[in-house]
Image (cartoon, rainbow, N blue to C red; front, side, top):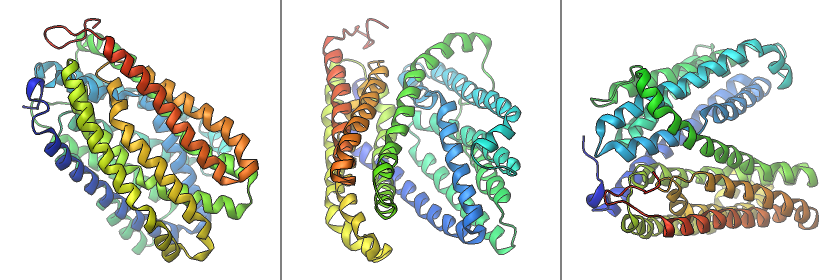
Amino acid sequence: MELPGGATLLEGWAASVSRDYALVLGSGLGRMGLGLVTSVIVARVLGPADYGAFVILSAVVAVSHGLVDLGLSDAGVRKISAYLEHQPGTAVSIGQVFFWIRNGVVVAFLGVVAFLLTPLAQLFNLDGREVALALAFLGILGTTLSGSVNAILQAARRFGRISFLVLTNGLLTLVLAVILGVSHRLTLESALLGLGLATSLTTFAVGAKLLLRPWTILPPTGDELRQYAPALLRFGRWLWIGNFLAVIASRLDILLVQQWSTPSVVGAYALAASLTSKADILNSTLITVLLPSVSALKGQQQLRSFLRRGLVSGSVISLGLIALIPLAGPLILAFYGPEYSATVEFVRWLLVIVAFDVMVAPLLLLAYPLDKPQLLAQGDGLRIAVLLILGVVLIPLIGPTGVILAKLCASVSGASLSIFRLYRLSAGVQWTTTGEKEDD
């Protein structure tokens, strides 16, 4: 099992990242296209009432999945990647511990949910839909199982296999939606069971087959749990906090606009936010591809080389996003109609913010080799504070443009805080002759 590492880690780095990025991005865009077709089928067959419940349940699942992940996904990738080249046996053991801890947390969470199903249905205005709510929560287990296999493949830089699984899941979901729709069996419950749980479990089964020897998902030993679990949980807790804050920040702007704008303006801004959130696939893909490499970096020279190349990659992608700005108007008006003309200007400015986030993403990844994920959480906390304060002040004065300015200031201030502290930390880190941090 060979991966680039040590002195050879950055040889051919630019070509490798470009190839892997194109592969993962292509599969992600393909999955997005398949998902759009699936959503059209589900929406038309279920009708507004059931489809609304389906969207609400999907949102509940998404938030719950983020809560129970505990930051273990990225923590697992980071730890496995750090050991994979020089100590592959240790990397495999960490992978086993990661898999069982992550899924064990979900099983425990579902056990608690089972006792609170009726109160939760009332909380989310889903009275009488307890079965649908139970199926939605059960889907978290399928998503976590398949996601855990994906994380191990990501750490091993098997991006081709990840892309295959992503497209497999999207295609299975679409085919099943068509079959259920044509046979008149597509209901809210069958959609949650078939399009959610069944496709995730199938993807997990396929992914488990794609794991190369000596990878295994057999239970770890007690000694392995005691040795590796604390480090995974310690690193993951800060990522969990940061990810949760990032989710709040990504939704806070719409809630702020809703407080001081008319329904038509809220609709126009919500569409802009939805469209530009799709562009975030460029950022998430870049992080997916770079994370295994940055986690294995050791020594000041490798850190500096990674930063130079990462900034080039991020800047190129950002310029591509900026180039899309002139196309926003014609495309939005053509697909959504003139009643959404206000959306055009919102999209243009929101694309600038996404471009900035993509450009600085490689710099923020330094938190992984430096073992300081708390700096990312601190940056996300500052983002929320700036967005909330400036949004409350500016939106009543200048409307939704105010929240866009607030989002830009929030992104710049949050990223700047994290990058500044990471830079100062990296300059003071002492490395051993083997490339390890001395405080490790």
